[in-house]
Image: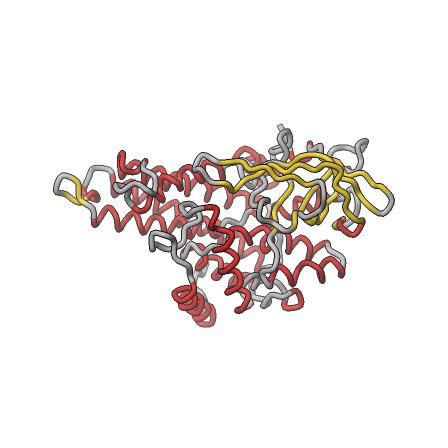
Length: 396
């Protein structure tokens, strides 16, 4: 097994690093941008400004085919790009749904008209997308969703509710799944829509998370009328398109590399910070804890490389993506936990405290990753996918 990159790939990595040094925005503290520590209300502006800079390089979706506004990068080049963006904590989160999930699903299933309407607007950083999948009673069992889309002439009329909709208060468009056949088995009667968020009848209500951020929302649909052209693919075949979207969501290379940067920051902290006249790194158990974290970070990277390698061979990762997502979410959670425990009571402080260390990133990392154990498919769902599709075990 050869983990070395080619000279051309190394040159591309250096180009990204040099560009980021000149173009990466700074946070209010002067530190590098952090998705878990900045004022969330300012983030859309920061994201949009940075996305415009990426668009000028063709880097919003560089892995997309050139005909759809990308650069046609190889899977490995895209992996390198994702690694460098994650390592730098680049502000790409709100564009992720459009670039990583909505756009690729439209490329696979969309009509020529849908591709023409949406793909260039994503790569030019003109639109932001959100994901209307989960509902109050349909999260892990997503196929139990109850939002309805009823055919009425050339339109569909949508009624229902979505929850945990990241960025819906900023998004221009939504990928939405709704039930179009009430009598079909639950996986068979679902359709997939591309929904303009300015459509009358849509109400967005904020959900504030335990970090005080407004990232999530509830979205209500009251007789929302959308044209037939909003349907992606075939009616009642939306479940299969939704599973494609979810597979795009779970490679987790960004999580692995983001963990590496956090670990490096923590290693520097324990080496340069003293307690009772001794460096923290000399305290019992500290270096052992960091060694465990380092092993987990490297394992997370290798699992993500496995996903990329399968894609480079033209294969479609499935349970492999779930393994990477499951492991990297746990790795980042335990890394946040390790940082908090090593810092002691200081590790619990908010970013605005004058006594806080490392801008409170580890405390917020721990809380952020607590939520990500649910986001993108719960830990239990990932284990079921691994057991059934990876190990061939029967459904319980």
